[in-house]
Length: 363
Length: 90
Image (tube, rainbow over all chains, first blue to last red; front, top):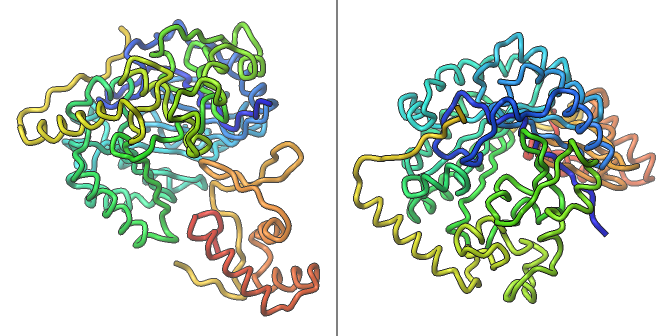
């Protein structure tokens, strides 16, 4: 029997004033004209709650570029959903934040690119840092849960302690240290973003110390870059098992990156009920359960923990979406990840100018 | 870490609130849920910012006909662990 989904990632737009080099949005982004209108989103949010979903994560692009954000928060809240806004903060005034909180927003997650202004703006491709710092102070004036998200990678990991100290000063309830995950623009920029093994070891130590020091004040969660893990991540908690994502046009995907897998077709909320898409659509069935698994996954006792890892990563690295995730040290293709680790080490030793591609909206 | 006193009034931390999963009451967190049964559920239900720890312990020892000192110890350990996770404040 298919379980109910627990969370919905609602990518309400691809538009964004930032151009972060690690953005997980697809390289081919959708323009305004393709976006689902307000009333469609409201209907979908209600369907999601009826389907058993508990959390909705409003994200993008930058969700604040949609003028109807308050209506969407109101609809999610009144349907009983826990409502989380994942934002860069650009476009958020105190008055607008107040209206979102009144509409029932439960939690805001504000991302930072660095503790150092110049570097932060360089990574974001926009002058955004000073505004974010000012906004963090505003957020604290509201009774709302506040998470500071630090996106880390090779270009800023060498001063992680400083970044944590900076984030601590913003007085969040939670801090998330998120290593860039290599999809979309981050994959395009992987050569300059992927951390070295040494950076990762230092990161684990620094995060452990900070967790100890801030215990009871700020909760710190750390999302590891799985290229250096022994076993793959339980991507999305397993394909079609607990999460679904709706993109700006209304297509429903099992994860952010699933469109990279050849032959995938995504049904749209304009044409089908969400429940049918979750239970019966081909996209959600494709890697659900264990039938698709090759060896060594099929007989591995970890298959109920990581569900075979990430299908998109398997495809992007091996060319075969049903291959064992090459991150896994048991995977026949694990040498691909090992050689990436070596290349990264060599790349860093050649310290030169960093050339990367900024995320660009469709013009 | 704040001290948990008999006069403390534990409450769910900001961003944590009750919700429903089917017929069950669960606590919704920024990224996840807590599903509790039995005594754990009873303790959290009393974290309303009004009951003091002393009142919580009295209520629970009546309900479960158990030794007050033992209940206080268990409830305090439970609440301190949840405070560390930023689920409960006091």
